[in-house]
Length: 93
Image (cartoon, rainbow, N blue to C red; front, side, top):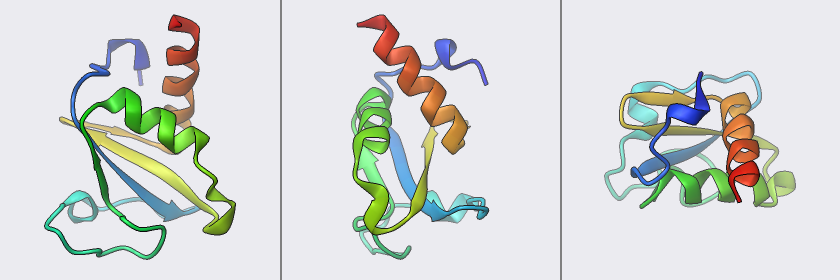
């Protein structure tokens, strides 16, 4: 994925999944119910992709040992893509 082409001001949904598990489309549906296991909220909506990426990389995930997946528009960012996006944002500062 070309993380330089993403709109970092677009809204995003962040979910946390165990390593090796890939998300299904319905995992990103936000209907007010906590559908996925901790951390809560899971899924979590963000006003801006850049904020979601920063949170996903800087959050203490040691308590739940899960990896972040982010959906923005039609794009799905894997945990590796989230890391690349985070590094890209750090370089832009």
